[in-house]
Length: 203
Image (cartoon, rainbow, N blue to C red; front, side, top):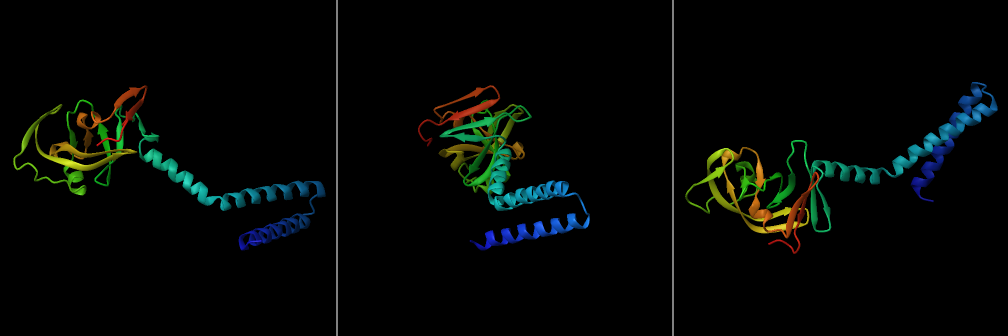
């Protein structure tokens, strides 16, 4: 018998004694006293089960909150499924050179666009192009700096040397463009779910 089991038995015995003493002092009829004692024992047993399984409960909670933090993103084999967010867009939880970011998946963007803060955190080389470039966006033309992402991962999907542009005009938004989506075997929207299928590992 382990020390934990011994402690549990002692607690159980102590509880029985305390409950029995309390009921005896109140002179409750034996039948009613027995029912109350069983109810207390049941409560105690459930509490002990919760304590004993607290690590599993914590792990399950972490998995749940992790899924919620990923915006409903989940992995089925090599396929990544992303639920549509409340704003009507699909947001992927990605790692850019090991830096975790929430990225808007935008098939209307020809190239992946990264905010300045993310570029600095992911240590992107902003000196690859000595001259700025103008890029046409839905909000007009903006000045950008061209760079590339050494390693970008979404679930089990991994791609390397992905071209990207960086600009203060993007604010704090990071966008996955068609140059990422075109590396996949396929992608599609089914209902409110975006499905990314890498097929063979992306490169």
